[in-house]
Length: 118
Image (cartoon, rainbow, N blue to C red):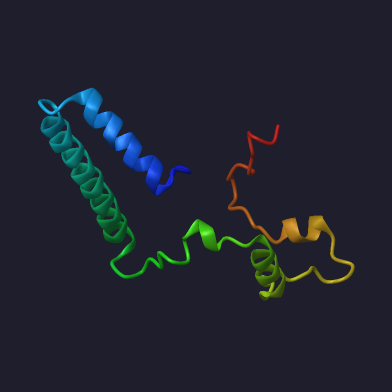
């Protein structure tokens, strides 16, 4: 917890109690409790929204834990998975013009034009 051991925490709490004073200490304790409740509710609502968007039960929260991130495992899994199927190759001797000629335009139709390619 932020590199503070038990003894240091007790000393800090005593100093805070002395500085704040017994009159204002209950007010600050209530305010701290309210902030903790609001943070807990915010986290619960965020998790509920994620479950709602992705479907309840579909999220494996343990798999998304950053402490389980291991680059070696990710690379190994990526290398071992089956590659995506490739597009069929053109027949030997076929030219680009022959494959383009396969597209037949209706009479009087304008030729295809890609304005982003120019």
